[in-house]
Length: 466
Ligand SMILES: CC(C)[C@H](C(=O)O)[C@@H](O)C(=O)O
Ligand code: SF4
Image 1 (cartoon, rainbow, N blue to C red):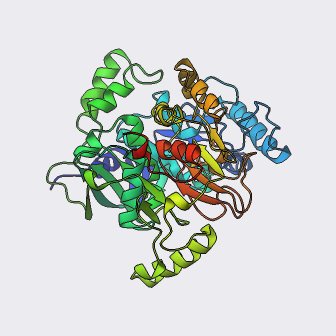
Image 2 (cartoon, rainbow, N blue to C red):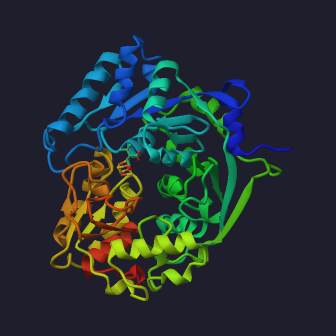
Image 3 (cartoon, rainbow, N blue to C red):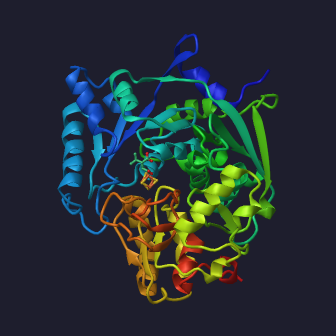
């Protein structure tokens, strides 16, 4: 029987096995200021060294301000976290991209951008959106702080083997629908816990047609369906993206790597534990209405009534979500006003996202009373956007143009929403309190977010694209 891509990468990295316990080798370890301090302290207490500093890369992204380069801009606790990362990286010989550095940015944006993430690798980070890197055909997943310490000390990780689910999306996307809408539609279909225990492999003609940045948007949200990781088999689009990147292999090494990467796909007779199919033509621009990413509808649908859910748990969850979100069943999204718009996060802060948002932003002005910000995912994205004068389009339309970082994606810095604020956000989580206590988050694509900023309420981006 053939193997799935997951099984191939797994077998390439299996170091030891005893019963159901497996030890796998880790090729890349990405770290940031939030989940690394206790792991470094653990090493220190046990008198251990960092096994492979050269496989470890650090950035500052969560606890920083995107208004100022000052490390103390978000208060003393955040400053301490950032200083601790600096000290630890220096002490253990880890390359750090600090605030102000030309390679700094959100951990899941800079890794691929620098060519640090390659097909067939195992990649971990103490961060749940590590699945982003699966877009390269790398087995990438988030780990807890004690596991971060384990990887520091041994460059290996104890892992259980996951089940496999193929998510096949065939056909051609209609106008106005994006990679973000594909992944929201997938999560809407399988549910926010529907992929628990699985590694997803996205395939089909609609996935193959996506750029690397779009594939990253898809894989980024695998965890929002409960999956361990999400994978897309590498192909010519992957190789073209990587060729010439700063840390990608060069010369003969590149050719050798390419020969190996071309074998990284699921065999035609590989067995998946589950297969889910979607038609790209059916996917319309999506907006979440609830407090998990699976509570999502197409922009032209009405807010659902809890009674429409047959499963009692989903019904109960819908009641709570509608209450928290201040929405009523049957309401149209175009009747829902937004107070904030956030274009950014590791889901949608890359150059193609900003281009898509700018295209819409160029058609009007931010509605009065709406506070809209655009936060590039990395210093490199910011620089590229400025070279294309996207920043001018945004600021002329009334958006704020920021420095790179996680920003309003989660309330860990100086972009925290107040209770009752309602945000159209290109990020990946709409949990209660995610952007601030009592704040309401609706997940959308960059173009849909920009359109909501101009209209002052949710609007079908297809109206702007005619
Ligand atoms: C702070 C960090 C540990 C967290 C995560 O693991 O994902 C954050 O990035 C998030 O998106 O909630
Ligand atoms: S942008 Fe948001 S989801 Fe991504 S790493 Fe930062 S906080 Fe987590």
